Image: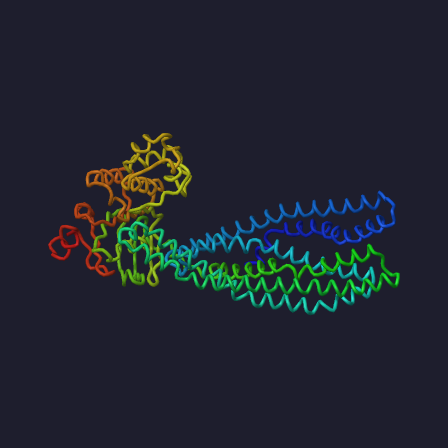
Length: 530
């Protein structure tokens, strides 16, 4: 399905095939032209027409090959880009979490998409090889039908070689692609936790964990390339054997006066062209890799997207969670937040605070239950990933906000003064804008503010700010986004005290909901902030 879609969407492969026709025709005529030139030389005469014909055919073949290389690169790049866009859109639609680990998803996006994206080129090249072989057999028949008969005796053996190669390569290629994705997934996990790994002194153990699938990858690679090597040496034996048989028949033709010395040379060229498919071990392996990659892409694209929560049923800014469950994080969460409420989410480490924020923000879909949101959601993180070419782009990311709106959001997040001190202000490249943890957090806050959301979710997004700055940011939010619902994950009692209502989580369940002043009488609640 994936491969056929790639072929259908970009018809330029027809141009590639059409371009190959004159080049292939020239290649098939070249042995005959060379034979004429040899006979001419042996006869001791100079025929300009024969020489020009030979040179012209060689020029057409070279020019066609050059155009084909450019076309093939463009078609492959276009196919890979299209597949990456489809895959990215589907992965985003699947949400988080999915069964596809980040590293595995990256492997499918980069490697598998590039390999499967070139299937049109591979198919055309294989078709050219088949046409070339058929043309070569026809040319042999035109020279002497006996030559074609002798050559055709080798066709069943050649077909058996090709079929055996495809069958033996299939499993190894699929395993190689799968294990490559597994290695990528483990490596991405390790890179994400580099500081923790270094601090714990477990670098050697982590390296061993990441590289554990390596023997399987090596075995698959050895199997794949061994099969290809076996195909190459068998084809290497078959070609001389066929050449010897056909040349023997051609020799009898020379003795009988049916063929000239030049015709024998042409016969040798046509035998090599006729064995083109057998000699394409690399191409056949590439086709199997494209099939294996397409299967991996189809695994993602065929995964059904969970149904979106109905946008209706909640007033602007209102949040309603009913029977929400997230495996290993949240259990039977029932929660209603009125529009315009400032909610603080508190609890011990591992109680499900970030999971609840993620569900409210739409970053995680619950396994069961329903979430209704009254309007758009802005989200800020403890460690935001700032994406964009410049600082201004990072703040307006995903929106079309102008400079004034970006600046207003940065002022509200108390980061404008930091930005204007950069070498080029808001136009400073992100790579040239070193920021502390607190400054990056405030830039992430500005990115959430600029979206003008109905619901603002802050997942420990002010953890790196001192209490005075955090309080200033809160007042700026109230001024810049008046009447908005705010859900703030926090570990600070002062923040919980300023909230209208506190949601106390314990073991993934809502233990209590109420004002901080009322919950403070509970010893276990006070221990949350200890």
